[in-house]
Structure formats: C-alpha cells, structure tokens
Amino acid sequence: MSRTVLRATEITVELPPEQTMGLFTPEGERRWAEGWDPQYPEADRREGPGAVFTTGHGGHQTTWIMVDQDPESVRYARVTQAMTAGTVAVEVVGSDQHSTRVRVTYDLTALTSAGESWLEAFESDYDTAIGGWSTEIAAWLQQP
Image (cartoon, rainbow, N blue to C red):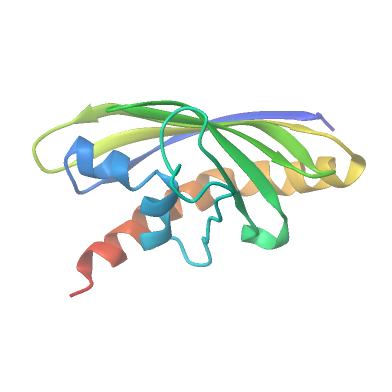
C-alpha cells in the first residue's frame, strides 16, 4: 500500500468563476457541505495566505492553512493529527458566464498505519466523493 495519494478530478458548478471559488473558502464551504464547521484561532483572519482554521469534519481533527489564494485558485496545507498531511487545491480549468469547471486535487501522505488505511479508503472513493460536491452545491443553489 502506498503511503501517498495524489488524486485529481473535475466538477462543474453552475456559477461564474468568482462565485464558484467563493464556495471553496472555509466559510463558503460551510454554506453547502454538511457538517463542515471551520473554527478559527484568530477570528478576523478567515482568508488569504496564512489563514488558519480547524475542522472536526469526518470524525478527525484537522488543521488547515491557506497557502495560496487568487481569483481562480486556492490551495491549502492540511494536517490530520496522527493520520495524514498534505495539500488540497481547487483551480478553475474552464468557465463561461453561467458555469465553472474546477479541478480538485488532493496530495496526501499517511503519517501512521491508521493514516494508510484511511488513505486507501479515501482513494477508492475519491471520484465519487468529490463528484458529490457538484450535487451538494447544486442542491444548495436550489434552496429558496
């Protein structure tokens, strides 16, 4: 079993690029991702390189650091204690006035044997899980 997983898949969001990328900030994701509840050690610093937040999403405590952010991409470093560490990136790969195609890339390394097991399950479900983001976002967009 590999200790590192590098996976990317693309999804389409029925919004223009600026609004789409806003959904991949910590607060933007809170709007559409069930159970996503970022907490900030510095409440006034929620975006931009160096912003730090934590999540308990998925039953694991994860620390996230925004590494880069521009109008068409965002990249985070993340560490899940005693499990995995790596990066997550979302970048625009195509758009028109009404929709945006983004590539979501996870590059994670297991820190322990428990992390290896988690990564194996994560990798086998990656395309389905990330593809589900489109469905979750579309459902959120349909809410009154």
